[in-house]
Image (tube, rainbow, N blue to C red; front, side, top):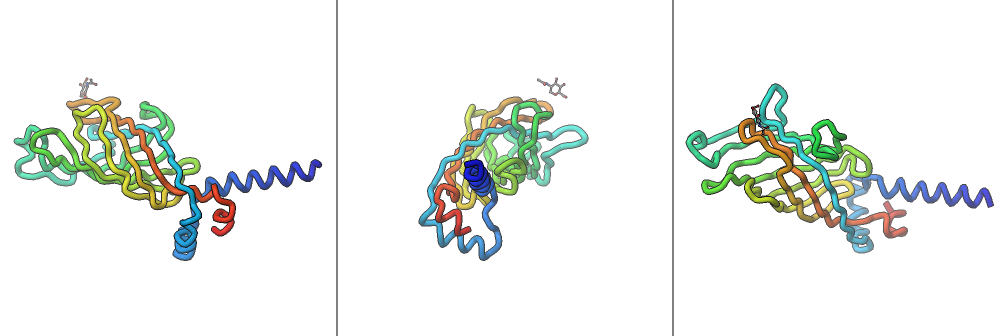
Length: 202
Ligand SMILES: *[C@@H]1O[C@H](CO)[C@@H](O)[C@H](O)[C@H]1NC(C)=O
């Protein structure tokens, strides 16, 4: 009886570890994954975190890399381009736990509104998503309460992901242009652990 419980516990632990593991990213592993894809189940994952965008001070996380000759006279900062590497935190507080980074660039692309083209990756470094990424691109008009951007792909546990990333300003200072953005992300991806046959094969 005790043996059976031990075996069950080991099997359960192995199943949990398999559920959290990044799939094999060697070419052979990826090929196997795609061949087994018809047996996989699509699942919905919801993620919630805050992006800390610091423009001012000695340690900015977003730096200007380009602007146009019109930018200085544009009320919408038309042409301004920044590269960013912003921590993703569990709460709105910059001191809260970091679960990853948003890395990419934003470009002020509207002459009518303060609106940005965002193109970036969420790079996760915590828990079961550590080592996995989501690629996001979209339209971000800052005055809108909610801005929806497209999750256009992913890697690791988010291989072949698609979904929506909803951004909302949590805090912003117009003078320094520092900001904290709340993100709720809905991701459709494939649950390789849901199918025993499939999980064994990778
Ligand atoms: C915005 O930043 C400026 C410059 O650091 C500061 O003087 C001002 O108090 C800040 N405003 C808010 C609302 O935090």
